[in-house]
Amino acid sequence: TRTAAASRLPFEPITPVSHLVDEFTVPAGYRWEALVRWGDPIFPDAPAFDLHNQSAAAQARQFGYNNDYLDVIADRGGLTGVLVTNHEYVNPGIMFPPSSDPAELRRRSEIYKVAQGMTVVEVARDRIGGPWRIVTGGARNRRITVESEFAFTGPASGSALLQTAGDPSGTVVHGTLGNCAGGTTPWGTVLSGEENFNGYFRAAPDTVARKRYGFADTATSTGWETWDPRFDGSAPGYENEGNRFGYIVEIDPQDPESTPVKHTAMGRFKHEGANVRIAEDGRAVAYMGDDERGDYLYKFVSKHKFNPKDNPGARKQNRRLLSEGDLFVARFSGNSPAAEIDGTGKLPSDGAFDGSGEWIALTRKGASAVAGMSIEEVLVNTRLAADLVGATKMDRCEDVEPHPTSGRVYVACTNNTQRGTAGRPPVDEPNPRATNRDGHVIELTELRGQSGERFAWSILLLCGDPASITQTYFAGYPKEQVSPISCPDNVAFDTEGNLWISTDGQPSAIRKNDGLFKVPLEGPERGHVQQFLSVPRDAETCGPVIRAEEGVVFVAVQHPGEEGSFAAPTSLFPDYGSQAPGAVAAPRPSVVQVWRG
Ligand code: FEO
Ligand code: CA
Ligand code: CA
Ligand code: CA
Image (cartoon, rainbow, N blue to C red; front, side, top):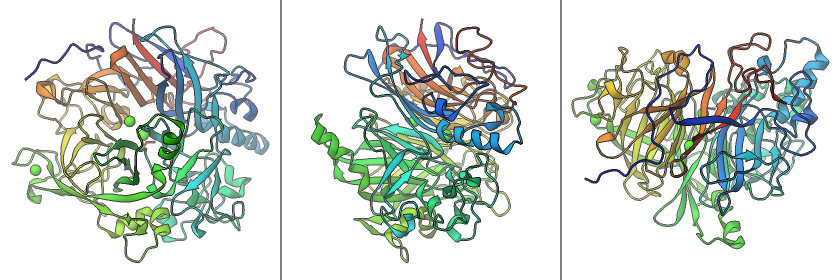
C-alpha cells in the first residue's frame, strides 16, 4: 500500500444544510462567487439585466437560464479560456409575475426561446488557482438558442422520419431542447444531451413512438405551440418535428462560426449526457443514460479511431468520430438468488449487489441489428429498439462517466420511486430497492476493453441518510462516518482519482439542500462520502468541475427558488440583497466558482 499524497483540495466535510435554508455553503478555508448569472451580458452590446424589463432581444445577448452542464476549458498558459454551459429549461413562474394577457404571454414565450440552449463565454484570471471572470465581448462568445441552426449527422440524417415542411431535406434543424448534462471530448468539443424534449410539444400520443417518448396533447409551459407550428404535433407538415430532438449535440467552443451538430448514430432518447473515453483500440466510446424511470443505459463505439495529433486536420477528423459507429444497450445480470433481493437494500449473502452484463448491439457496421426495424427507425425510435432486445430497465440513469485513468464507468441512478410497484419493473440486483427514493451509483468494469461487449458491475453506493431506517451502503465504509447523500445526478473526477457526485432531489428525499460530494475510490478511504458544498434553497447542483491541482471547484446552480413565486421568492441567490449594479431581488441560476482563499 502507498500513502496517498496530500490533497491539493483538502477540506473538512460541511454540515448538511436544511432544505429550508437559502445559503450557498463551502468548507472552512474556501470562498465562493458567482462567475456568471442569468441575465449577465455576454456581448458588449447587451443591456444590463433588468428583471422588470426583460426582452427577447436582450436575453439573446445575455447569459441564459437554468445552467446545467458546465466546463471551463483553459487555453495554453492557463490564464484564459472558455466557459461552456447548457441552459436546460425555464421557470416562467419565478421569472415573471402572473399574467393572463395573451400579448404578454406571447412576448415571454419568445424570451423562453432564447433563454434556453447553451452559452460559450470567454474567461480570464490573473493567476492559476485564482478566481476567473467572464470576458464580455470575447471572440469566442456565443449564445445557442432554440432558433440556432444544427446539422444532423449519421445514418438517420435525411431520412423520411426527420423531414418536415420547414426542412424537406431532413438534415437541418433549428435549436436544441432540454440540454441537461454533457461531456467534453478528448478532441476539445462539448457534447450536450437533449433530455426532456417531449415537454416542449403539444402532440397527441397517437402513435406507439409518440406514446413511448411521453408526448402529450396538453398545453406546454412555454406556449410555443400556440404560435410556432414546429411545436404543434397536429400542424400539417410538422408531424416529425418531435423526431428532431432527443439527440446528443456537439459544439466546438473554439470556433463560434462552426455549425453545431446532432448525432443520430448515438440514438434518440431522453439523453442525460454523454462522456467519451478513447478505447485501447483507439476508438471513441461514449457512455449515455436515458433519464426516465425504467429506461436504459447505452454506449456508442465509433467506427474510426481517434487521431491524437493537435493540428487542424486531426481535429476535423475527430469531429466526425461520433457520426459513424455502433450503438449498444446494457443488459445486466445479477449473481445472487432473486429471493435474496428483498427490495429493502439489505445486502445479499455474497455481500454485494453485483454481477455481469453485456452490451447488446442495436446497430452494427452501419446497419440495424434489430429484427424488423430499419437503421433509421432504430436511431430515431431507439427506445422501441431497446425494448425489443431485452435491455435492463434502470432506476433513471443520469450522468454516466468513465474514469479517466481506470476506465471504470460510474452510473448515477438517481431514484425511481415506482420501482417494484404495481405494473412497474420489479426489483432486481442492479436496481435492488423498491420505491427507490435515494438512488444508487453503479461501478461498471469493461471486461474486453473499453469498446468490448462484456462487463462486470457492482453497486458502489446505495444512497440515503444512514441515520434513517433506509438501508444504505457506501462500498463498505463505516456508515457513521459518511455525509448523507441522496439522488446522485452528475458525476465527475478530480486529478487525484476521486469520484465527485452532485445531487438533485435531496430536499424532498432527506430534507437537506442538494450538494457536491467527494468519494475516494481506492484504498481504505473507498466509499468515504464527504460533502464539499451545499447549494441554495430549491436548487440542484449540476455540472461539477473539480480542478484539485489548482484548488478550484465549479458548480452550476440550477433552479434556485423553484418552489417560490415571483412575488414571494424562496431564494435570493446569488445577489442576496446586494446593491451592486446589476443585482436583483430574485433567484438567478448561476455558475459558481469556489477557491481556496
Ligand atoms: Fe435534467 Fe436527468 O436531469
Ligand atoms: Ca451479488
Ligand atoms: Ca441531470
Ligand atoms: Ca459529468
